[in-house]
Length: 368
Ligand SMILES: [Zn+2]
Ligand SMILES: [Zn+2]
Image (tube, rainbow, N blue to C red; front, side, top):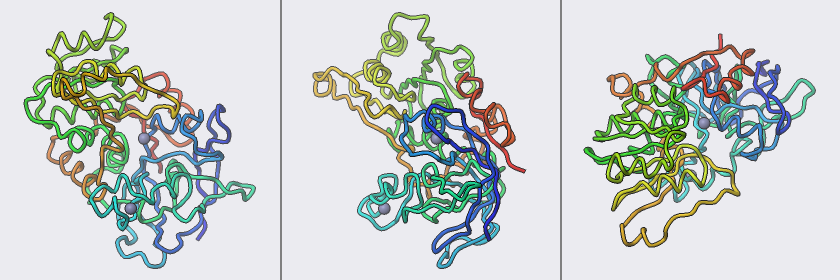
């Protein structure tokens, strides 16, 4: 059946978000409809409202949600009503060269499902009957969402869904950059630039993986305090030093791993600059497509440095989402502490304002 759902929509780049009642069509073949329980508010949602991420509006926001399956389409075998799921904004076909070699995050078919479902159509319309695009083939900042099965990951019951939601983006991106992309070795020295939802997770990923020193770098003292709660051993406030990279190098002698969690070429250059010999800088933040960075070329061979990127923490979502939730259950990763504020969907504009003001580790919209 078609369902009415309150949803957070970007109508036009540069304009405030709107909360509207939309219609969500039932699942077609290989699709499921979920009742969304909670959806995190991510900087990427904000970037889609400014045009930094160029998904054409009108666009239903949201890509970091957990919910319960309430209807399954024809041909669906892996999900049934009542299953708990986390959305995946990476569509993973399971059959292409990248999926088969174990890199579903690079799925060759994922680009077909950027702001529509993989078949290029949507299940979402507004009050006037016009199609609404969906962020990352998800559009889960809404009471209901119809997803392709390749954009959903089944999880065990028993984890609060508002915690599980965060695994769909912030936690996977930060922890995965450490575990999967960098494969951080115990006893290493690390620095994390940019302490938002992703940066905090990079920090706790470094702590869980056994880093010896973890330096948090940001402009906001409150966030640096929070970083310590997640495992940072040292902090650098960029506003209090001439050069953050030099300050990190002075503390550590040069780090083995640096994580850029901002999405800016200038910060990527700093992350690279604070590396020691043999170090690896991982760019995690999503930059504007026109942004560029600059590094000293000689240091690549002479110091055997590496500069690499990490997309959704190099995730294998079906493997990694449950794995991260297992670490949470075992008390080895913090999820409760990440959620510093919850909002109703009607309070979504406030949630976005609070994110811009840097008030939250993660703000989460919770549905009835
Ligand atoms: Zn996100
Ligand atoms: Zn694929």
